[in-house]
Length: 230
Image (cartoon, rainbow, N blue to C red; front, side, top):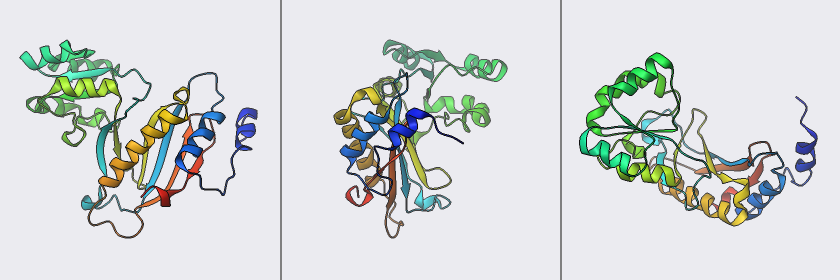
């Protein structure tokens, strides 16, 4: 597959074999984000763990200091005063069975985060096969199954992201938009890395952070010096 002219020009700015400090890498990402839209910047972190083992899972959620730059639409499954609390802090959709039906019958996915009170998980269980593969199923570890739905909605809208290993032991996470600039992106990146390092499983042996690459949506990847991260 041939890369576009902008990509080729951008790639010339990056030394492929060099491992950059985080701030320098993110500065290059900002320079090489040349698309006509505000590109998302992502971090891709390969860990020295085996995700097939339950005791080596790395998963959690954090609020990035500068958010993700994305408008987050929240769907909250709650009843009574919890539903009212969610509406009060600006949840986009709040309800119960009617949203289960809407998702099942209309293939409706006009939301980015699903939050639920624990008593609603029985209702949502029927959606496991459709929400699970999309990474939308509420989960206590991610803070999306909680009695404090108001706090969960506020955090989601403030830029809370979930990090988790994929099958190849890599974590893929958005850390903001190219328009944020180097300083804000670096602060977001450091916040994410601190959380991942704190989440290191006790059973993980050897080098924990194997490699790290940062890139914008359409730009080339820039390697970050993993030795300076852990």
